[in-house]
Length: 301
Ligand SMILES: [Zn+2]
Ligand SMILES: [Zn+2]
Image (cartoon, rainbow, N blue to C red; front, side, top):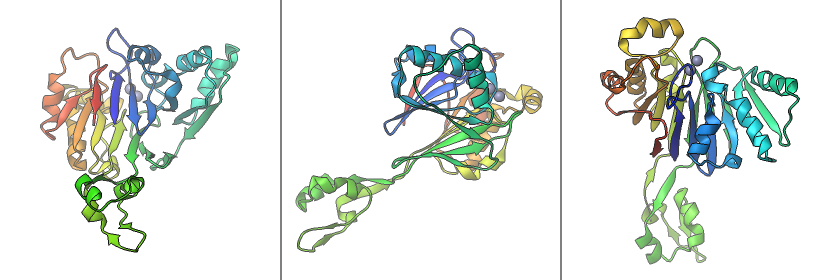
C-alpha cells in the first residue's frame, strides 16, 4: 500500500499548505480521500493518472475537505473522461455538485454516481474480492465519516524450497497463499503449513478526520496497521479544540493507544502553528509510534 499526502492542513489553503486530501494506492485501486481546494493541482504535481481515480471518498461537507471536487470533475470532463466516477459522501453532496453544474450549464460525458451516506453506525460502502471499505462515523460539527480500508485476504508467504521439493504446480500458488492444502492426482495430501510461512495479517488503514476526541471509534479500529487521525490543535488550545469539535495531538495519541494500532499519522494541522515537532511530542505522551503527515510525502506500508 502506498499513501500520498496531497494536503494535510485545516481551514483555507495557502502556498505549500494544502487542505485535506490523500491518495491511497491499494490493491490496484487509486482511492482519493477528501478533496480540498486545489487537489487537482496536487494530483498533477504528484503525476497521478486522473483516469485511474474511480472512487472518491468525502468525509464531510466542510470546504477544506470538498471544495476541490467540482473543479476536479470539470477537469475530468475537459480531459474527455468516459469512465464512471463514484463519489461517496454525506447526504447533500449530490445536490451541492449538481446545482453548480446546472447553473454553469456544464455536463459530463461520464457517469457521476453518488453514494450518499447518512447512517450513524459503520456501513460497508465498497467491497470487491480484495478490499473492503467501511465508514467510521465521527463526532464533528456536521455529519462526518472516517473510512476504514481493509485488505480482505489473509495471504501467506510461499516456502519456495518446499514447493519445489513437493513439485507443487505454480498454478496452485494463489490457493496456497489463501491457506489451502495441496492434493495431487493420486490423492496424496501436502499440508499448507509445509508449503508456506506464517500468515501475514491483512493490512488495514483508517482515515479519521475531522473529529473531536471520540472513544466510540476505538473498537472499530482495534489493532489496525495505520491510523491517520486529525490533530488540529496542541494542548494549549484544547478549549478551541472542544469548541470547534476537533482533536489535539495528545488526544489523537490516546485514541491510537486505546486502539493498539501499529502506527499513528497525525494531520489536519491548524496553520496557526509554525513548527510541528510539538505535535509529535504531545502525541507521544500517549503513544510512541507517531509520525507527522507531510505534504508530498509517500508512505509505503
Ligand atoms: Zn477540516
Ligand atoms: Zn470539518
